[in-house]
Length: 183
Image (cartoon, rainbow, N blue to C red; front, side, top):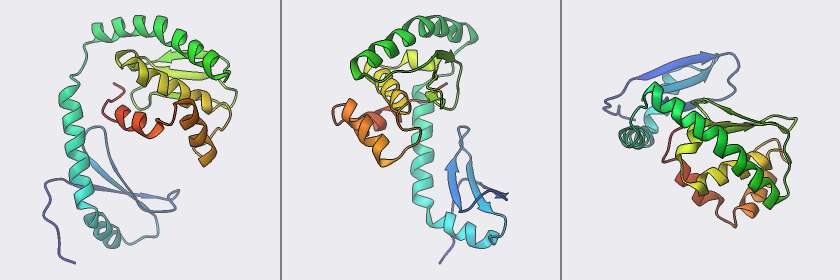
């Protein structure tokens, strides 16, 4: 296989916990290749080069998303926090009532890496950045997290439940959400 000319650097990270090779794009636009401690680095880099097209497309998508979402000032973040603390719990409660899925407590946090999370106890945490999204995407995230109170994983059953409560639109909403970034 011939070497692919690339305009990005691949950071190779060896991990004792990794069971397989994984490739991801970081929020900062880096390319991280995580490999099990026993895997030869050259083999992993050749595999990563075979994913060149995916890397280029992903970096372009990240650049477009970053250009469309300018960085917020601290004042803008605080204003968004006030809106989020008032709006998000109300939407979660409404979605919970509509779907019949219950939860414990709700918190609104300044999460940069995920839109929401759900603990095993059924407590839901939502990113304050959700408040800047369209209502249907906020509702989708709430449905997603509420479904975790039934299935605390991403199994087939979990996705079937999310799809049911989104009227068969889970994939469509999931793809729409990818156009935004929680920050």
